[in-house]
Length: 310
Image (cartoon, rainbow, N blue to C red; front, side):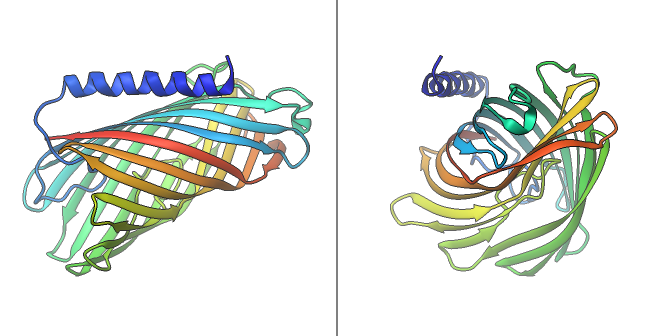
């Protein structure tokens, strides 16, 4: 099967799954994520399918790599009171790596297919009319085909405190702490939601989790129903290769996004961007580095299909 046919197959499979989810869902709502539900918003459920194709890129020490990926996300939120809201997040990530003569890894492929399953929850509480507390624990299993699910567990959470400085500006700080495979990761979290004008918004676009901070995106709402955005984030993924080895890949995706709302409940997002500062490595079972290589900038394309319900 060629690379293009793999991508088309993944897209068709993901679209079919989204259609099935839509059939079993109920009344319409907006397709907003459930990371931090507002008590004024009705209970919501959003479903998203995102095929991603990362074009071929050279490895620093010789060889090249490309990646076909399929992301599935389900998010929900519910306001329990004027001050208290809860949410959940379920995600599945399937990645198919295609290496060509990777010198760093002895000319062989360090891994092939990766799977990641994540389950998370969230609690948001208004301490005062201005200050809000947000807690989001999660656990995930991340593994290659040669590893079992049982020894691929990672877990942790995010804690943040934000302040509604004005009706159009919310700022906050937090921390993420995750126990990954033979490694503990701590990173800062910056919370921002700034309605600069009626058409311009600077905000965190992604659901936070153990793959890294949520990133920042500047979005512009156009008059014809389309919106245009651009942003960047840091992404890192550790996964179990086998009983004796752990793999890791990381990069900084920078993107442009073109989006349109279709009917009342569907959204279409087209992404184009570049993976910057990428790297790949293999550790032993205790987390000691065995080998690593950097990855040259890699263009990527993505199409996100989402639906929202309440």
